[in-house]
Length: 140
Figure 1 (cartoon, helix red, strand yellow):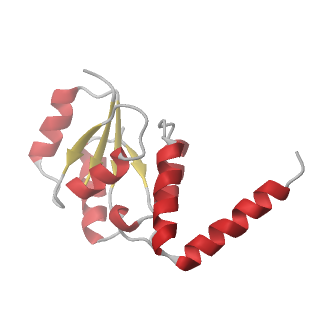
Figure 2 (figure 1 turned 120 degrees about the horizontal axis):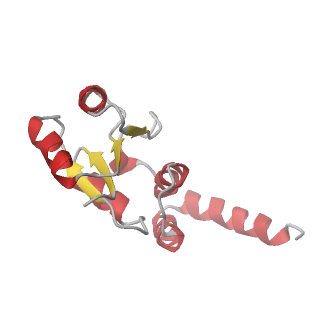
């Protein structure tokens, strides 16, 4: 089959990443525990590229160690420790991590999500307004 595979902990993580990806990616869910089923699924997919993108916590580190042992060629992607979970990491940061790993990201989807978050958060809305004003003032 080939293609890219991202190992994540749960369904919410996979859905969050899918919402901003602009290319087909297969997700393998560990449900917090790395096990033989996950590795069998990856082998069956015959993926060209395997990535690990799990939470910055004890469970995530345990998954990383297991994957590193079973699939040493897998690339590890990280969220910042301050966010702890993929589910709570801002989409802008997730997009940045994915783009650095050469994934195609739907920037319009990221922008829509950020604007939706800003509608619910007055401080974020003000920060975005200041950024937009600065961006318009820049000489080209």
